[in-house]
Image 1: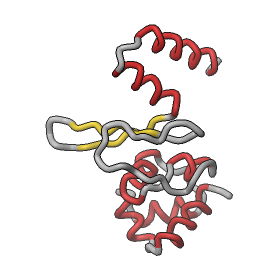
Image 2: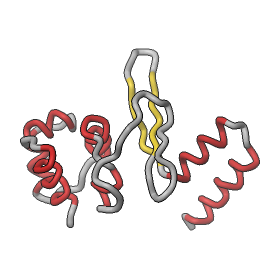
Image 3: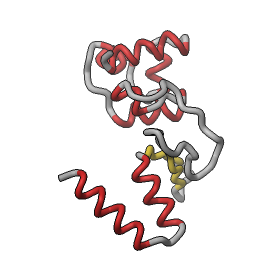
Image 4: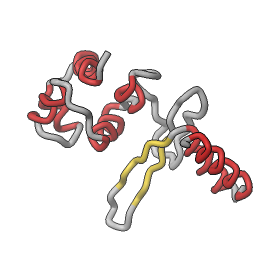
Length: 134
């Protein structure tokens, strides 16, 4: 199943039109048409669908995991740990603009370690992540 197929499935399950998805995704209806024709999804669009419709970004991009993620209100760090799940951090800027950033398990563990001031563990995790990317 391709990204375009998963996008069609969201339209069907959520019972929304392409124009509504365009509004939810902060894009034009023409962009939705291009996505449905096979164009690669833009990450800002994917994040917008997560924020508005709880669409799992990993599922939308790769087909892995659950289609939708439950979210627990306004917590600063999501509680979806383990099993390939994703966490999120909500960032509030001075101009009252809020943005949610999606994190992998490894990134979420780094944030947790930082908040707990476990700097030695942070360095080990970063070293392990760097070795993985070689």
